[in-house]
Image (cartoon, rainbow over all chains, first blue to last red; front, side):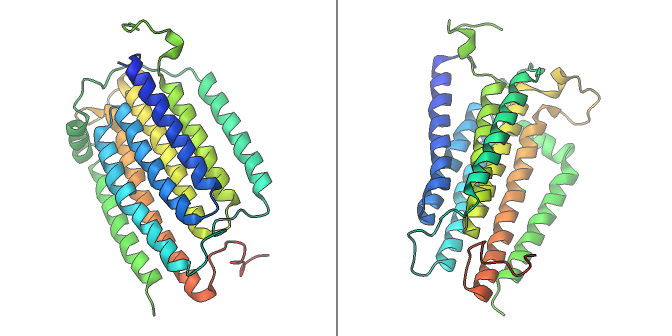
Length: 166
Length: 125
């Protein structure tokens, strides 16, 4: 399955669009353009999840990131930028150092990935991953699941309290 | 590994491809988070970084199930999908972070009339 020609083409195509969209998020000087390319990057990430046989995670990615987080970010932009949009996403004076640090991180990360002897194996492609996630989530990971729900409640209340007009 | 399509083995998409993709995206997000002036843009770049970590987690779930990594005695019906479960938790935490972060940005904007991170320097040394 993983050495199918169409699989390879899909992987490289989706990856190219994903990296390009992420770069445009960072280099565009208008923050509205950045937010729209962020939506593209999130959608392409869902495609990567589908290629990894994680259909449920891909659906959650589309619902939460493309559907909710992107909208929240756009609302944040609308409420904090009144008239000026050009040059609303400029870089600061330390961009050169930031580029060096990021490049060093990239080199280190790629070296670690290449030189680690991963114990790959096993096959989840025959598995109905959505059903299995449901089983595992409510058996093994039931307690973390409940804690995450409490975290979301706390974050919702906190966001309202912080952003509310007094 | 069987190679039914006849492609060279070097062209096979393996775990390394996904991890390198994840590293590239994380570096892009890191550069943005360090170099942007706008607080909303910094939040967007943090979302990019969390996104790239999710790719790595789901790739681990796909290519390294615990049975092959030597993890035994793990409770639960089929524990091979821990990476995907973790990705779901990361998505939930990222959504919470986006909501609270943008709430803070809105509060700062109301008080200071700016979202440029350079100008929010009240506690700077």
